[in-house]
Amino acid sequence: MNLIMLFQVLAALATTATGLLALLKPSAAYGFIGLSPNGVRGVSEIRAVFGGLFIGLGLVPLFLGHPAFFMLGVGYLAIAAARMLSIILDKSYSQSNWFSLFIEVAFGVLLVL
Image (tube, rainbow, N blue to C red; front, top):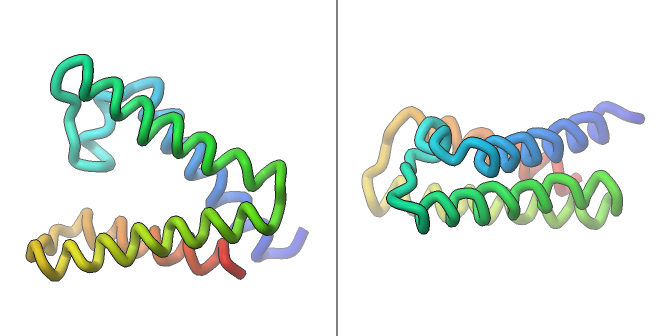
């Protein structure tokens, strides 16, 4: 396994871990996405979208290989583009937003290689 593939696997595992955290402990979501569940519907959304979706997005590349790693990378780059737009339009210059943007761009670039 070369170094790029190792980083791609680590990015997929980090995506899966994020999903597992959101699925198993939705109250922790505030710490990493800035959202707190409001009632049972909010908890359900965090479990489903940030939990289930991220688990699926992280695990599938580990089984399907390059095309799925590429797609995960495109997803991260799309998230980064939307976040950058939000930073500019909403003047949302928080340190956590910049950190998230950095991770999304880094994962995106590594995964599309």
